[in-house]
Image (cartoon, rainbow, N blue to C red; front, side, top):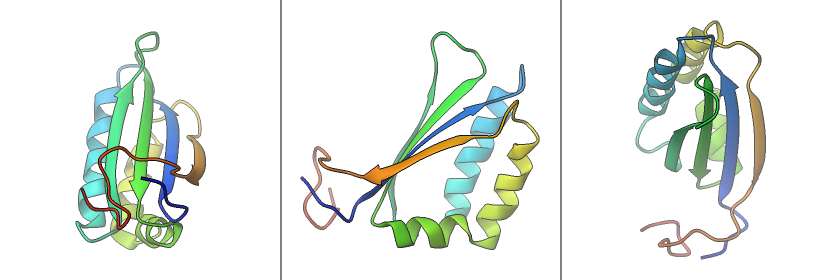
Length: 110
């Protein structure tokens, strides 16, 4: 599938030593409080083989507007603020449009 409207986010975070699992739990909570109708199609949380504190998050959204509305919502902001103090440095984010997503139709469904 290709589609210029599907919005992708790639984030990298470095947790304080020994706090990675807490950050991961809060990332999952953030996705839950965003709601099932938020426009978040899928996400994955990844850890690095060579860095016990690194976390990579990949998200696929219906569009940028859905991402912006959800991440700026009060419930998501409350959870996000809880994990900021668990990070060794500010998170880095990279944004784009998904060019191809295996297994999805043009309307974003499976």
